[in-house]
Length: 294
Ligand SMILES: Nc1nc2c(ncn2[C@@H]2O[C@H](COP(=O)(O)OP(=O)(O)OP(=O)(O)O)[C@@H](O)[C@H]2O)c(=O)[nH]1
Ligand SMILES: [Mg+2]
Image 1 (tube, rainbow, N blue to C red):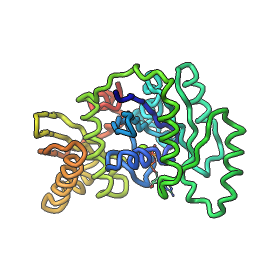
Image 2: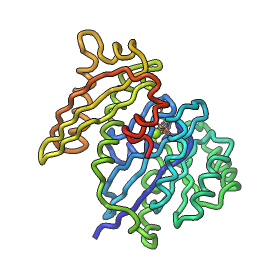
Image 3: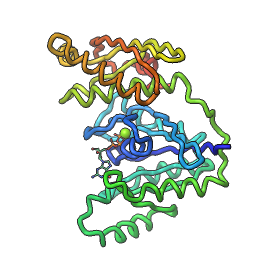
Image 4: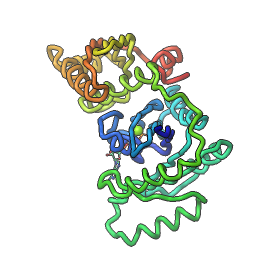
């Protein structure tokens, strides 16, 4: 029987959490970009790894820049995963200097039965490899947990990390959460995948001002039918997303369909409508509907 292992990945924005999850899933399942605050909601990904089933939770990282309701909901959303996760990957990058936020996460996790692993990403950025040992020693003075150095870019250290999780999972309690990825979770993932495609295509403030809401999701054996809304803040953003003669929105639909079909291994039918929804980031009801707030 397969062992179900829950792994939650937390840490500052831009440290590479989604990149790591992407790499592990070997799919384009999470939104990745240079813009911080890309991930807005906890997203679950299911992967088989050497006789185990890993449930990976990609969580939003904090960035102190924004003060809207959406940002404050994002700031704490990782806490929900502490209830049932077996492993907590606290992600930082080689240039991290202040560990206060990471310490506060670990303090919260202490009350739960969770194995904590500090993962330092982006070691490829170091020109002098002798620096690695110094960095590891410095971080080790701050934390009593094991520290793993990785680079998602060059793939260094990732197999070792996954093997370590697999090997130490034998004694962990793995029966806390449901083993089914729910329709609600699936809707969230679909929303974020479509948002990822928009991020790739649009620039400037459009990605941050855009939300995707799956209004209807009909699942049958071979087909998933999606009716979605793309909400933006301003009329000119709506025009950008629709594009000249509707070309952009068409491309967004095609690209999203191709990712989704690859990930879920089913046919997708997607219809998208763009609406201007002013100040949606502070609209409690809308954030709730979209799944950004419980
Ligand atoms: N050089 C280098 N860049 C990386 C590495 N891993 C990720 N990145 C880059 O770091 C940036 C942020 O990566 P994300 O995976 O979106 O970061 P995140 O932690 O999910 O960010 P939030 O969702 O905002 O919390 C992207 O531009 C990645 O390409 C790495 O190993 N080396
Ligand atoms: Mg992310």
